[in-house]
Amino acid sequence: MATSQLFNFSSYKYSDSLTVVGISFCTAIVCEAISWLLIYRTNSYKSLRSSIDKAAKKLETMKTETPNSSSSSVAKVKISNKKSKTKKIDRVETSLKESSRDLSLFKFKSGAVVALVLFVVFGLLNSLFEGKVVAKLPFKPFGIVMKMSHRGLHGDDVTDCSMPFLYFLCSISIRTNLQKFLGFAPPRGASSGLFPMPDPKTN
Image (cartoon, rainbow, N blue to C red; front, side, top):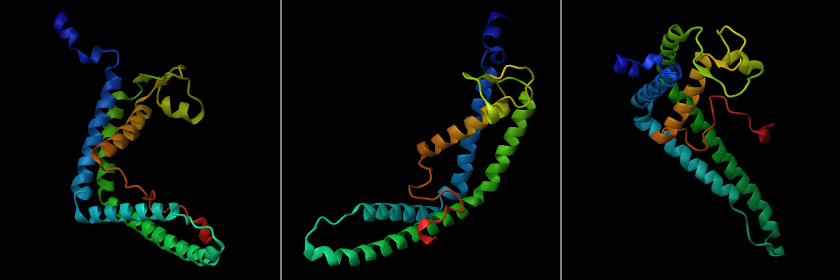
């Protein structure tokens, strides 16, 4: 009898929290596996990623290069060189933005499948933990954070944390770090999303 109580996970104080975290971790692994099957292993993705990495390094090198000479005989050449360098930088930046946009479009292939998996998992967790306190926040939230963390819960203790809020935090942190660990993080220099911020130089 004592042995069965010892291994009764549901009676553990943090069982609900660990369940949500564990399911979030497993979901992140499944999502990355789907992304690998549909995207990361393809030659098109590898080619796009390689071109973005090369363009980002080239752009960084071009922006950090500065002429060392300051004699008057080179003063006139500096102006023309600066204009030429600016045009080259603009071309590399344009190429980098186009490659980043193509990469974002390419990633849409697995986006629908991943979204479906997340939707199903969220529905499952919501049915298991609806109206239940799954964790305690170490601080008193305010404003919109309190509305998110206390959503669906009864009672006045604002430190009570609902499943959607904990699942949201776990999904973001776990999947982001898992992508970095597996080497699937977005390449350096890639713009976020399909619609990057406009270049102020063009305005």
